[in-house]
Length: 307
Image (tube, rainbow, N blue to C red; front, side, top):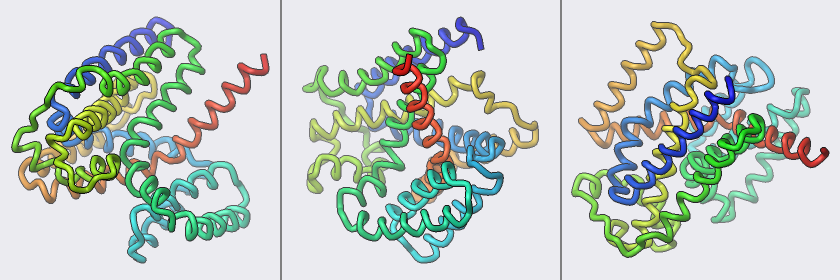
């Protein structure tokens, strides 16, 4: 793409971040729920389809099947979600940097053995089980993509967009903190499935997350991170061309998206379970790409420092 086109996309993203921040300030709970229910499945479905076309950014053609096998085995053994995320996150890195199958197996055995001790620690279990599939995915990994893009494109607007991305949560933390955001009854009922993010982060299981000021501020940040995460994906359409697919696939994805949104609003319990599964699948399948981004950031920084 030309510099002009990239600048246009970056400035659009800056406006999107500011708009998401304003909406997150005014209606944090409602914004998060609507973004999760409407933009969420559209993002998950289109990204999974795009990742499949890119062989999930793994080193070998069928490496993703190894990741799938680990997921199935973990589910059959009824392991906690923290274990599944830990195993697939580590395995994705192994499959990306190790070519020999025997060495891959040995590395995975070491990963599992290390996990036996690491995941016994409550903090690490919480990080992998709660934060990696949620806030780390939508904020940290999104920030990594933006940083990698800015380093590669070498244009000022990319760095400005990254700066705004980092500043928005800070502004939501420190500006107008005494202003109240009164959640609607629908939001109170629907946000229950996500309340663990608030109570665990604030280390208080007994607070009223809808009236506690710290919880409201945290929800503003969560709503911003999720909403912009989805918008950022759709803003990159012309950059990564995820929209280039067959008409049949487009229709199938569109129908699944419509059914997902309808299910969420028709039967909340079933809808939230389906969206959670879809979200978790896309989070795990994106791990190889996440690793590639961090590797790419390291290479770009090394190149700049070597000049």
